[in-house]
Image 1: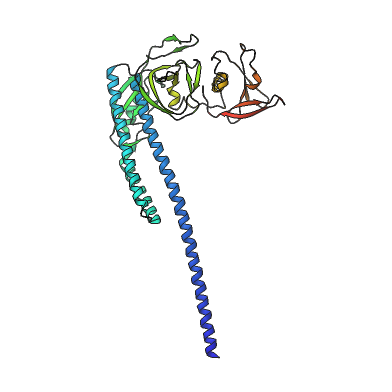
Image 2: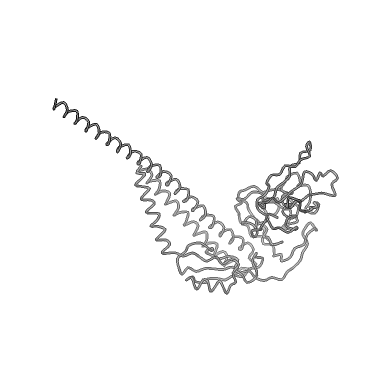
Length: 390
């Protein structure tokens, strides 16, 4: 009887120990699964951040190269062209070196992925990533943002932050005030070694002239000389217009699709830099390609701004391409809902139906177009543009 009791007690202790071990094993498995899930999510997030970081860097390189190509195209004498060509060559070499280093990093990452040591590799990559950026931050500093700053102030900022002032080139037809910095190379915000030479392009004051457009319907001031320098541009945005002439009031031709295009002539009118397409379709605003004009608060627009925004939206519609820019009459007013409305009419066209061409700026500052239902007489509104355009 005593032996039987001892065997039962031993079996009970054995079963209890087995249950504890099973519980610990299950807990370890659960923790391992949670760690693996967190590892996978972290690796995915890290990859997305890395891609976004690379995309931003490439965009900065492309923007800098495009700006220099544009300035080279607008240069009026050989000395300016020589300076811009040297700056452009340096920028293109920097971009090529970056792409080479990027390709090498991708090859290294591909070899590591083949090892299959996911958790260890992730720890290693995070460690290397942190060490690399700590080391980079220790060795490099950011170029100050100098656009719109006076030349004297820019010199002082560069000196205080340990940079060396390089070539200063004055150019007319810029979108900043005369005497202010229009562009720096390297560009503002980029990381470089302390003591790097920074070249500046400064806006030059020009004598305003007035000339009539080829359509005889618009005039402009501060028009720069047309340059025939040829270069290519990459358009990523949608909704950009092709016009018959390099003026905001020129006749709309079509909407240009995203892609790469060749520019054969450039000029400056109405506060925009313009480029003539090699295809012969017309002109596009290079200012819009580069990101547009200064950000406009669409919740506090003037009547003229509302009219220009509505005109831009009106001519976006292919149904209206046969009208010229002077035909629409745009009436702007407020309703009881405190929103700004705009009605478009074409007095010279008796068949034009104004009910189908109503617009309003909603409470969020977005431009809406009214869809008119003839059967019910109701108007349904939908957002057409979120940002100001003209």
